[in-house]
Amino acid sequence: MALLTRTHNARRSWAARFALAAVAVLAGLALFARPVSGQKARIDELKAAFVFQFSNYVQWPDSAFKDASAPIVIGIVGNEGMTKTLATAVRGKTVGAREIQVVDIAAEKDAESCHILYIDATDDKRADDFLAAVRAKPVLSVSDDDNFTEEGGVIRLFERDSKLRIEINIDEAGRSGLTISSKLLSLAQVVHDKK
Figure 1: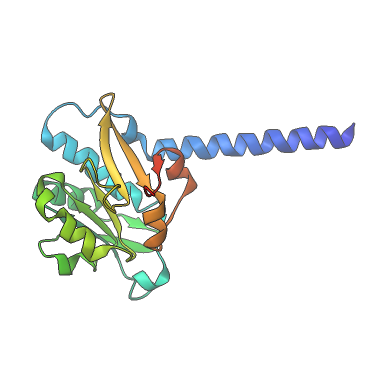
Figure 2: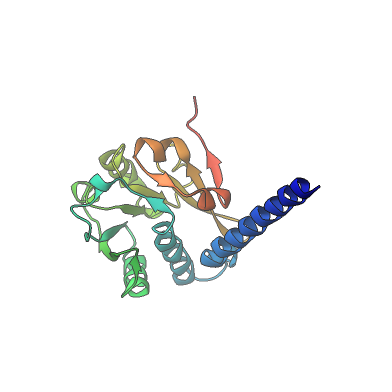
């Protein structure tokens, strides 16, 4: 009977820890629940918040950084307003020991220096070129383009039921050498390459 009680208590303890972890993730990503209706500036704020939060739930290989103190570089393509919003939001913030640096990216060759690359859907004509520049490199590619994860991107932001949501191509993340936290995956629509 004592063994049964210990096993039951261990299961309850595990369930409680899991529930607390889930609450912490949801609190950290509380912006997932906010409505996105409204002005473009408000939507850009939400997207910027998502992009920053991704840096807390993705692990890059050591080779992606010059050294242990190198910053996490977030590059933005085609949305200067989002660059300004995100740069303001992350000022003074760190992920672990790493500072966050936000830059506008205008040329494909500069995309490789990023750890996170956000490609605005309005720059659709150049999106394929930017994706080709970072494919199979340790760069977390993110966009709000409808076909992004099908075309080789890692994370797609999309609106459903007036909320901003995420879709993750787990196969592309693996090819890029990125490890995505199970906490983030549990909040996402996970997709695989089409065979």
